Image 1 (cartoon, helix red, strand yellow):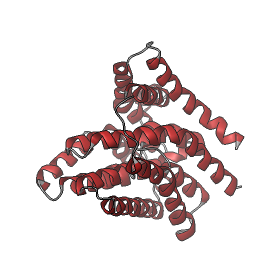
Image 2 (tube, one colour):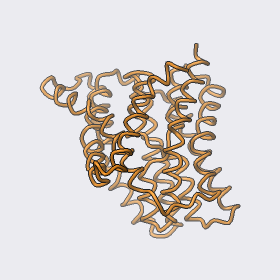
Image 3 (tube, helix red, strand yellow):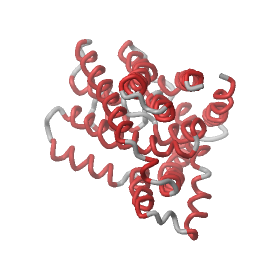
Length: 310
């Protein structure tokens, strides 16, 4: 376990640092938001594009992994949706919970954790998980929260969001360069490498600052706790069962898929719930609870997977 804890220590430390400096007044939440915007719009796309373009396309894409990860996410989405409805929640609120339980913080946390755990080849499963969760499950959530109304407007909003997502764009450009076997031009590679090197620390610091800046006003009721538990425990277990037991994939793909599924909920879930008036405050509580708890659960899954693959 010590090996994976050492890999996780910088991640936890930088998140804690971001939270601490905001709490002590050495930085503001606005500064954290600006740093997060820089990471999401510039540093993370540079890192992702460079890594995707540098690997053979066949090594980055596995149809079995893609199908297994997507099936796992859909199962969790439907499970949370059904249980939430049984608990008396409205369709819109239940859909917000289901989306929060399945759309992970893949950019800010997935990138540093997966690259530390499995190396640069982890960019392949990370890219496929982004397609599954950001392009498909997030879209399902938006449609479900719309409740069958204003579907054309929802479709346009989804398409605009996907088209303007710089990380998705970086994946597409990197995949095209990998397919053409041209790689990143040498004149651009140094710039992307310089920007990409700042992706992990700026993203993690911004997460810590965000946690400190959103204190107060949260209610951690049983629905909030349920979604956090499903996100951090049930989703990775379902992914493990699908990828390892059903599909019998190589341990690399299993470990990558489980770690990605074990990540906390993405902040974009809050934005979506706010847009559709689906109890955004509860979604914020789900994100905060899952993020804090993941600092213990993700290293735990990493240790278990490392032990099972040796």
